[in-house]
Amino acid sequence: MNFEQYMLPCLSKSIWGFECPGCGLQRSIAFLFQGEFAAAWEMWPAIFTIIPLFGFIFTDVFIKIKKINSIIILLSISSVILILGNYILKFI
Image (cartoon, one colour):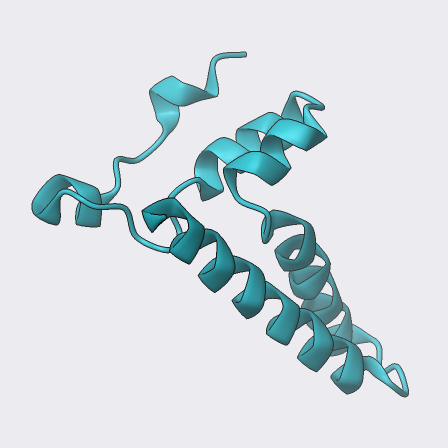
């Protein structure tokens, strides 16, 4: 399936001409649906921490797990590091 025809353009890139920290998220998700995990990592590495993060947050609403807050904090910090690291590397 061709996911690119349904993707939203980056507002930051359209207005100012440079990518935002979230650029690549939609394409990364499209690569995941196609089973291209390495391409998804190259496009936006934080996808592999964001998906489990949202899964744990969703699970926490319904099921209380003892150490889930620590897991959510760890995944959040990892996601921020990956997003900022990827964003900085785009400018280098």
